[in-house]
Length: 161
Image (cartoon, rainbow, N blue to C red):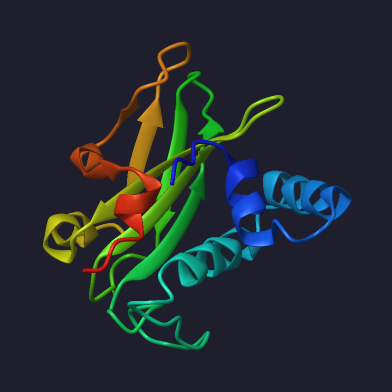
């Protein structure tokens, strides 16, 4: 399935709801800074991966799914130097792959990128920090960061491990 924008994820998860409801959800995800984005991403993943893993309860330690993977959602923001940055936090205790959705806010559309990062690949970045940083230079559009080789499609981020 090809998904490039946040509204496509919302339609995937809530396609049976009226347009007004989906628009409201889009507005809330785009403007809030709390954990609703992470919960939304967990629900998207749970729906897509229902045949091969199950979403665990809210208090599961080190993972969100029975396959030991963890869902992470981060939104890019503009730093004072003009560079856009997204921070994927709370990674130190994770025991499996990270299934990440990065959102680039826009005026009309919010672009999304996906990463599926194996545990061994991000472990060295947990020393002295608890976050992975990704950046985009203004006018460039290319995500940079130490783990961008794990950029993938929606189908790949939801694949069976």
